[in-house]
Length: 212
Image 1 (cartoon, rainbow, N blue to C red):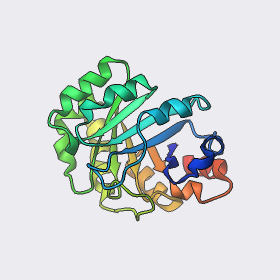
Image 2 (cartoon, rainbow, N blue to C red):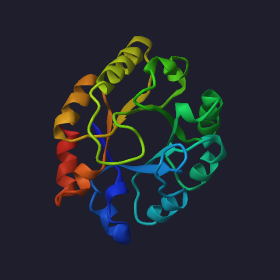
Image 3 (spheres, rainbow, N blue to C red):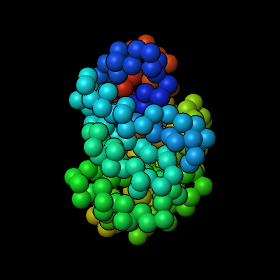
Image 4 (cartoon, helix red, strand yellow):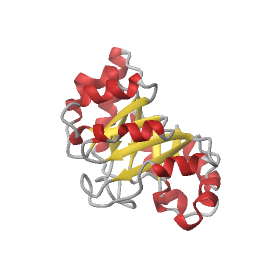
């Protein structure tokens, strides 16, 4: 699996050193929150440009924001490699998917734990990635919701049945134990935050998670 560390729980006063401490990871996960779609508020597109000066990782941007269609261009312009927005946050997800892909950026869609994964069926063929939230979005350190495994298995079955090319990503409560569970269910990318940043040998943890 690909391990995409979320640096939300890192020490922002020494962010350059924190990002370098996870240099083994090919992907870097950006948790963008607006204080509206979710209760917390984090950073915006300027964070991408800052980190780009010392990181050549794949920028995996998860927009937990209302009306993402009004903001995606900022992330495209500031070096996002993949933009994931929430199905629940926009009235016309297909148009937004096409807008992002037209500019040569990969596109993903995410759903909250209470959203039925079947709602994504009409969009599956157009997506590069689907992000299953295995916790309620907006806060780190929550416990893994085991009902997420059914959604992951469903998405894996659909792409095998229809030869869809999307990756399946999961975010929330991932550690060595839950990483094994989601891998068995069909996950390609795991987002891991506090479990990595609470430990000293972060690159070794990343390597271990990639190969559970």
